[in-house]
Length: 376
Image 1: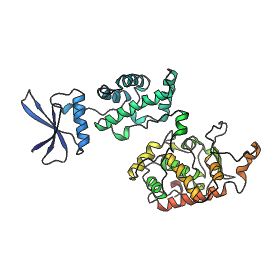
Image 2: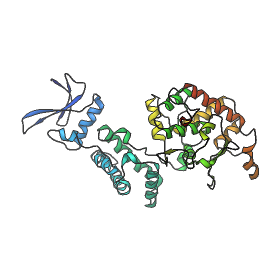
Image 3: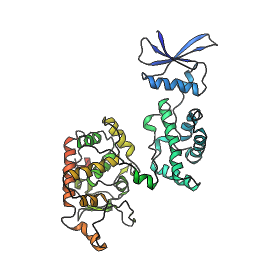
Image 4: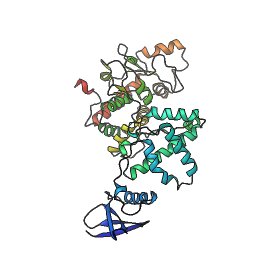
């Protein structure tokens, strides 16, 4: 096999082999007085360069074989340890080292592949209890994101094992931020739905499409919030105090009705019998597999339904009520309580949502979003 040098990086040579698509790293071993060639198991030039640079950054000398077959990273502490040589080269090295120490102390033993939103909520609360400003907590989590990115690039961490690390914003940041998810077309939503691999993701997306609610309302919803007699879904659980992100009572669309019949007690969205805390990771992966351009998340569903209602000529006030942006205008509390039971309550918005869901359903090839699989 013949090798051709592509780049020199430190004491290593990045090479191409005559009969392999993969790149190789080569170095001269003084003890044996021979050149050693080790496959990087990638045909991507940027990935190959990143791996060789990592060898240099980690101080690897001589035969790099053992360094290239190190065990996969599992914990937060392990990914941060890998990141330390890179962090030392940053202009913000002092802050980064402090952030690494804090992350290690608070969540270092956590397994990356099993981390969920509540783990990062607990981290935020613990960091704030130590006196950190919210902006500093957000910057600290950026260090963990960077560490995971490096680990994936060096093939020490599988991309699917990287947790969804939430972005934290202050209220002022949130008010000035752009829309949280790109508006998607019906064909794009159908393509993403067809790439969903788990039932809990499908259930969550069906409820999102038919309610255009914020994802938190769906993931926290219980079966007893569905009034099958009057065909109303109460997005705000009984006893929960309403916030500025108002959760309205909505008429159950005809396209959602089959998914609400004879539900077992407990959360609407479950995985192995346990309530699900986030689905953005799974939804984002489905969008990626569908070949969508990027910028999609669960908020995209909400924005897309709202856009469709506007295009169908639904009154803006009615759209606002459906989305929870406004309560029924200046209604006395008793009227607010009973208005969802009126026959014409949000009728135009409901019809538009049903049309949009049916259009998406007509484009789905793998999943039937009009009939739950347990009824087939």
